[in-house]
Image 1 (cartoon, helix red, strand yellow):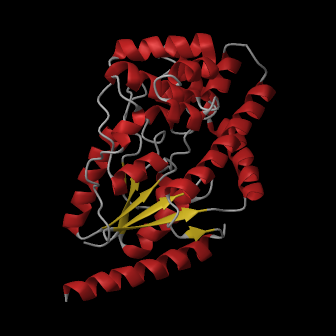
Image 2: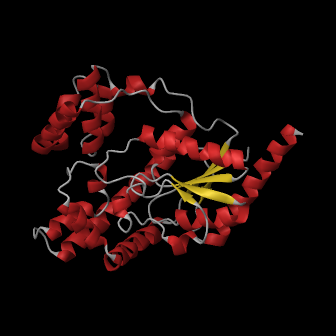
Length: 316
């Protein structure tokens, strides 16, 4: 088995182009590890690669889920397992790329055994989140799961809601489930991960330019099409970066300028959180700070070849 290559990094850091270049050099195929690029309805808004960008390289788990679906990390893990197994049997290299760190963490460290939360509990917690906000969720969570409440503060309503709904559904703290994980799909020695960490000022400029390009490519049309379906606003696809502001503009609630400004700001903040995730969850992954494509390729190719030769020596 050739070690799988895992590429993580903040949004707009050039992960997709790098993965495609690597696949062409190494005879591999690309597997998506981004939680928004799985949705077929978000081609533009999620910056999903088109046929021209793919340049003949086979891509998997891109745009295969309907926006009305609440696609979970567990479902992605099973889909990714199937693709990795298929590539292993065909002798091809698997290159997994995406900005969803939880996907890659579950792939390499195992997934927590959190039971499914009943829909009525989810609905109750959504109602609380809407009426009381993140501060109210934290106040409710603190007496039953003080560690999680303290760690999250009031800056992450979605994670606070998740922790509270797990407690309501199970009577157990979220951390209790993190202590016991399923075996990872990729074990030690079966993968190598890289984190792209380009200069933040340059990345933020690229985020702004990319969103402007999305508007020209039809992001507003995608947002309107999803609005017409009258989907639950709490679905993951409806929370894609830029979606809440584009739909607010479509409803006439804000100006186009404010929608674009807020969407760019939120995406930059998300990129900042991704940098933090890399530092905390992937402390030993090699960092590639250079934004230059050829430099990135040289670093990854050299390290990958060294590991691949080591594995071949082990089998000889």
